[in-house]
Length: 144
Image (cartoon, rainbow, N blue to C red; front, side, top):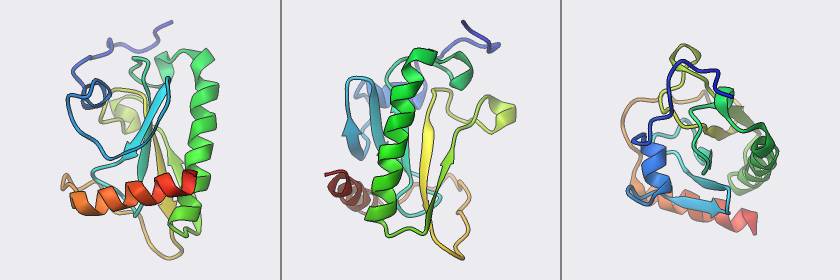
């Protein structure tokens, strides 16, 4: 059931990452999802959990697949809190332009948070690839 006004765009950046056309700093992958570091992190350790199934956002996602996705979000959140010695975790998911969505493929942000440290804005500037790779390795190690 599609409840959004627009169809899924197979040329979105996450679809290209899922097809291997664009590299990413991969943390975890299974048959249904890919987890990788956000290239414009709002905090140290900011990761994205992206289902492999084509869906624009939560509004048109296959409900039967959301249970696995949320279980994975929890697994990544627990690992991120440990890996980055975070005081908390913010989970964010946006739907449609008016809801703050900028990439139109369902994805969930897992963002480690630290007392007294505000989130960085999405500046359009990509983080240093060496730092992103190191953070991906930290998160992988925490996943075991």
